[in-house]
Image (cartoon, rainbow, N blue to C red; front, side):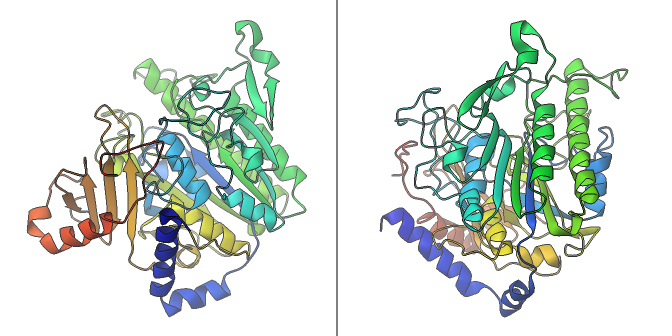
Amino acid sequence: MNRRRIIQTVTALLVLATTSPAVAEEEERAPARPNIIFIMADDLGYGDLGCYGQKRIQTPNIDRFAAEGMRFTQCYAGASVCAPSRCSLMTGLHTGHTTVRGNKGQNAPRHDGEANRIPLHADDTTVATLLKRAGYATGITGKWGLGEPGSSGLPNDHGFDEWFGYLNQGHAHDYYTDYLWRNRQRQVIAGNLESRRTAYSADLFSDVALEFIRREKDRPFFLYVATTIPHKNYEVPELAPYADETWPDEAKAYAAMVTRMDSHVGKMLTLLRELDLDRKTIVFFTSDNGAAREWKGIFDSCGPLRDTKFSLYEGGLRVPMIVRWPGNVPPGSVNDTAWYFADFLPTAVRLTNSTVPAAIDGIDVTATLLDHKKKLPDRFMYWELPEGDSKALRQAVRWKQWKAVRHDPRADLELYHLPSDIGEANDVSADHPEVTSEILNFLKTARTPSPFWPAAID
């Protein structure tokens, strides 16, 4: 067993050892084998939804979704940028252990796509692989970002029966593309040939999701809807209902994209009711990372949080998360439990009554989904991002009420007390040496080296 797997196994065992009897008892009572839908927006900010305080962008369907489910105030993405965040979601690993740790790396294995895009390894186990083994129909539509054409990271090789969308992150910027991938084949989008713009890809993804639900309604299914809204380019078929606002054109487009995504979510929820699948289906809604732009004075997309996408401060990592499961998840509840994308895999596997792999970093959060008063065991949550102009290894840790950020392994650790400083304005590391020491000790073994993102620390 290599060093990476040893560390992951030890981490998993430590989490199991610290799980309280009450949580274990709740897990035993948890309903099993619901349908699972995971909807993920792209670059949606923590403050972009009405249920999270947005005043100008209309999101009535998602707001109703929150009123019928549980809204989390301290949920975190897997990373502050696209590909590694999605990798964490799929594999249950944090970015100190994932195969994909940034949007672009080095020494990429040979494939037919864009250079320096790192794919999942053939032996990376995803949540879709595990749910498929459990007898679930598995589908994905939207943006993948974890494997180029001809690579080892294609969705159909990692547990998905059906796939339709963009493999490449850069390609996903084009909402009026003339081709998308359907399973292993390029599918021509005829309505966009010869520079025409009649087929909006996010609408196509919504249609594919609805079709999948209708077709698989009589068996358990897992559907991952990774829409590209509201990622740039900011383009949308119509600016309504914001066309007459005095905002910049890009702001109008951004708002219209979010509202259009809201309508897609509404269609899915309506279909679940029509097919009598409401109580049989748990639905998650979130964003892959923080907002790409703050839109200060217009939308204030990051709310009270510091910084944006690409940053390891809260504005880059903390995301909206809403979970709805009528009859199981308490409606209208608000939960301040801290958790992150690595927890989705063990939670989904637990809900399907399957076996959780030992070598993961996430933990099962089913207990707190069913009862917002149930707390998770204290543990370290970790992020790293080996990207940016400096190419330095940037790291962040959440532990209890503390958030630590380090911009280089040789730099001092910044420490923030989030309950009193959600905007991470006051570094209190000098006042809490015991907390800083605990986090520094954790960082010594938090990660394993990556051949694709070599760091000076390795």
